[in-house]
Image 1 (cartoon, helix red, strand yellow):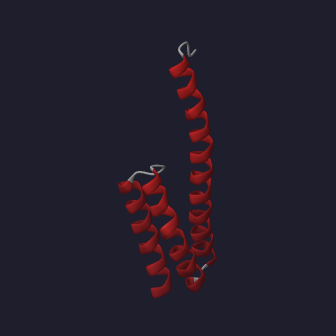
Image 2: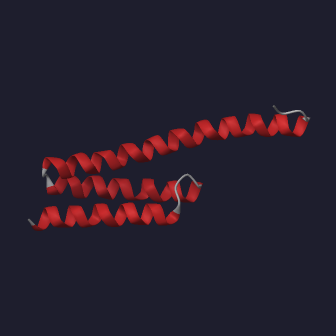
Amino acid sequence: MANTAQSKKRARQIERRTDVNKARRSRIRTFLRKVEEAIASGDAEAARTALQNAQPELMRGVTRGVVHKNTAARKMSRLSARVKALSAA
């Protein structure tokens, strides 16, 4: 348990940051899920649109420090490949 005033304040700040980061991570997952659902439905145009909407959201997560840069790049790469394969088929 926090003893000093500084550690108590840090604990409060961490608690607030955790809530904010949790909301950001949830928002990113929602956008990614929409892409996944569009791919699963087989709608190439909807998948492309969902991917274009998800990309800035994912990159914003990188900027905010919620997601690692390489993780975001990997997710975008894999989703892009799947959307491209869907529109080619």
